[in-house]
Length: 257
Image 1 (spheres, rainbow, N blue to C red):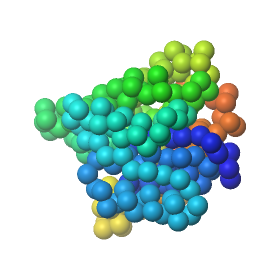
Image 2 (cartoon, rainbow, N blue to C red):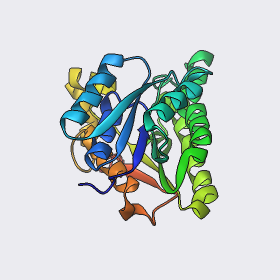
Image 3 (cartoon, helix red, strand yellow):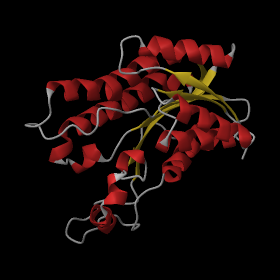
């Protein structure tokens, strides 16, 4: 596919997992992709190399989004890589701080870290990106099914992703006159380094599979393909949505699906 030829994209947290798959998908569709990473330079370099080897275009950008200077660092690298081009697609994928815990067991440090990376960073990135974005652009926020499921052990994490969803709907209303669409994608369990415990504990994976309508754990490409659609011209009339990309997780407690 070449539907994004001539366009540019920034994907945060793109060195591994879901972010890497998104960067690869957008590059395969023709976009020049800024591959953001926080600390794993080798993983980011590998992602960029894989994209280039497949005939795509990409460059790495390092920034610690949990720090006060991180957004400035991100846009310094982004603008250097774009070399005067405008930005067409922004994917806020980077997340951090783990899952926190229940209200009783989440520390103040964990809470603030979750909101710094999952809420403050996307907000400030959008703020900086808007003057750089072309009209008709795309913003996609990677959220979670956690706000819908209300799992007590993920209270602070679910709150942070719920805030991201609110940001998306608010931006959609604000940016509609510019033709910029804003949507969220809400994955469930996806097979990445962050969910390696599912490979080590087959019973946990089986438990999730049993409450998922499509009967398996998600793959990074499952999420990337949804983002690819939202970034394309085919999604020009889709905005202010939260796309459930869980394979149908926990649809019916009574039946397991």
